[in-house]
Image (tube, rainbow, N blue to C red; front, side, top):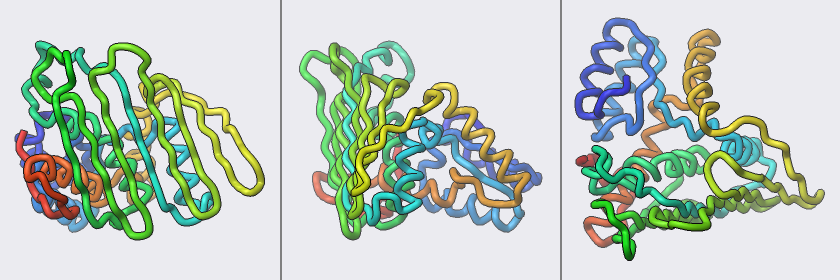
Length: 267
């Protein structure tokens, strides 16, 4: 289902009630309660409902997630993400009409990644956004969020109006090691793992585009065949979506917001 999210929710429900497994485009829903309802319908029908958070299959993010969830770096205590690029390509497109564009359409990938490594442990989100000097498109292109979670903290910084020298960097620290990834863009990344055993630099294969899309589609098909929940199942996706909604609400309310403290968002 790749329609606009407003029209998509009732279409997903119709498909589920017709006995169909569903892969939904992101954002999954604009209302967390509506998302929970669709999840419950899928579960009652014995169907798989997944969300196209294709960043989960970006080679660098996938490696780091698996290293965290398998316990390689111990207990997670921090996750810091910085993406610095030029999003000016949206000029004259429908994307320019989305006021919270950076958080709602772009940063949602990294909120989903954060949720994939901390689960539902987040306790508060505080965020800001502003227009960059010299930017020529309508939505603010600078946005940042601080997330507090049990036993740790996270920061997500998005500079979407950088004309030269793009940089995409992620740093994760745990009680037994750390992970870092860096590169000029989403498709070119190097990863380093540091533990008491030394430093490892895995050789990654593939790129976010198109492996992210193959991953999202293939994982759903494998989950159907194996009779298990897909990695990008809709119930788990709601934790990342709740962080996204909280960041948007924090910008508007000028105060910290708890995850699930903002249950709806408008486009």
